[in-house]
Amino acid sequence: MDLTHVEDDLELDQTLFTEEQIVSRLKEMAADIERDYEGKDILLVGVLKGAVMVMADLARSLDRHVEMDWMAVSSYGSGTKSSGVVRILKDLDTDLQGRHVLIVEDIIDTGLTLSWLITNLRSRGPASVEIATLLRKPEAQQMEVEVKYVGFDIPNAFVVGYGLDYNEQYRNLRCIGTLSPHVYS
Ligand code: XMP
Ligand code: MG
Image (cartoon, rainbow, N blue to C red; front, side):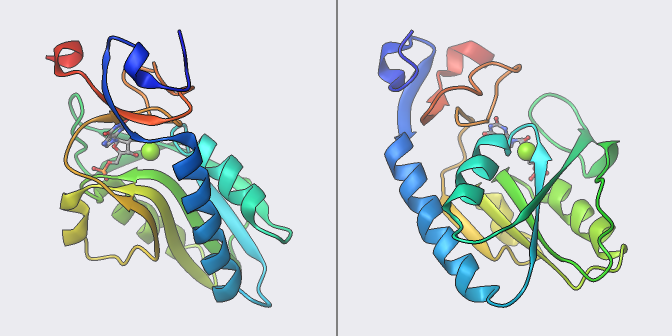
């Protein structure tokens, strides 16, 4: 299977973003982040597992030292919809007291998971908490919390690749594509 272009993979519908487009957008986001955090130490907090690829490329696009830590959360809900009821599966190793926290996400859909996460992290006494996400779906724009860095706004379709999965598959695709409806219907 060719993991660079999804057209060759029968279960994928179309490529939304190529690896080149993703990496170049992350470089632009990194430049914004560097400018905004001048003179401040950043703690990048990645949300497992989807944000692994975004974290790797965003962190390496930053021309400065950063710390990285990880959280794993599970949002109770059925199938592809999240409910906003969240459970911590793996907590941070880092004390957030006085830290500038930048949450790194792959995708924001309803924003329920992230709203919960922000409230949780803010209760730990950080100097600031902001969000960087590669993708944002339309519903997320109704979110009360501001998302400071957004890579791409996408239509309301289920997407996979570059860390995003369907039943734990497709995370290692280099591009991001839409899944053929026949796969999940
Ligand atoms: P909420 O709705 O709380 O959920 O913002 C965000 C989480 O839902 C998952 N999600 C997706 N995963 N393709 C995926 O692989 C998608 O199109 C998609 N939409 C939502 C994802 O885990 C994200 O963190
Ligand atoms: Mg996620």
